[in-house]
Length: 427
Image 1: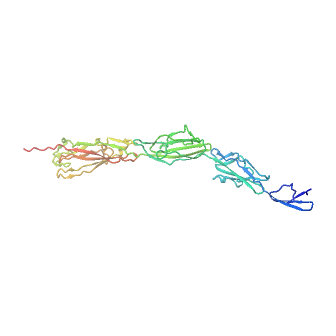
Image 2 (image 1 turned 45 degrees about the horizontal axis):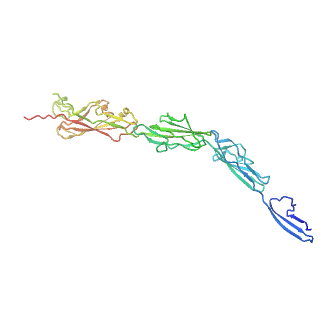
Image 3 (image 1 turned 120 degrees about the horizontal axis):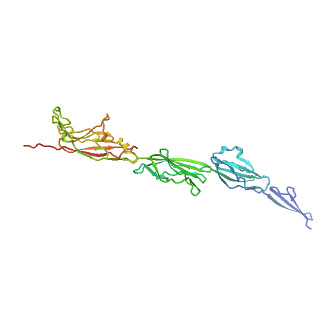
């Protein structure tokens, strides 16, 4: 009969006991009938199973209206956690969202057990990390985030500057991207649905157009902002105001549309042609033997036979047309400036060329006045010496009510033809 086998554990514990974590040696000893001893050694390493923890999925919620947080967030407990040892410990660490660190005391950033639920979370991304630690210092961890979305965040485009369209005092533009249009705001963030309202304010502050009666409501497929159709912007500075709102609050921004008038006015005038004053205007005055107005015959008042007298109020030199895309012609006419430059005429005694000073005025020439406000005639020189046609020039210049001048002075001829030359026949 073979001898009975005897096993001894180095811990001196019976083989029916559990092996603790760590290394163990089991030595078997067999003693036969003759007293021979046979031994063998078994090394046993008991390792601890690692703990585990499974976090819930990431959470995304919307902040309460006009508040920087959501105060009723649930679903914060681990889905599962544990260890083969019953005395493992679950703990958590909270990392606040940027900008809201001061809302938490030190004791609110760490804890043991499950994170309290429901709880309040601020706008941004909060991270909760769960850790399981067993009695042997083994750990397992996982993290999940709670993202709280706030009101929409929008950025308006830069201010837009443009000029009036040709021939009109407005600029018809829409919300196409700049530079052709005045542009749309950018939606930086915000959970849908977002309600969009746009309003255009004219330079005088009045409402020009708005979609407030039928706001645009965005969606994931079409988040907005909505486009604005063609609008006739007046000269000056208009405001385009944007309002975006979701369940957490609202955002506003505005940008300017600046329209300037750079179109010059258009003026026309007719050339003027006439002869010197009629010969019968000459009168004999024996009490006045002195010649007048460069004429030498004694006693003959020939003034102004070698002029064309443009009587005060005569409209022959007035502008015949004055138009502007923005400004009223009647109000503009006071800005009209004119200048008559005379050609030289011969001296009746010496025949030498005689120059004549310019005549200038503002408003229509028919309103020409002296410094005292008394209406004045304008004398247009003729040639009573060689009896030739004399051509003078009148120049017109004006700027509109927005300061736009005509591109260049308008020049027209003033043609003065002489009276007939009478030559006495020789006998």
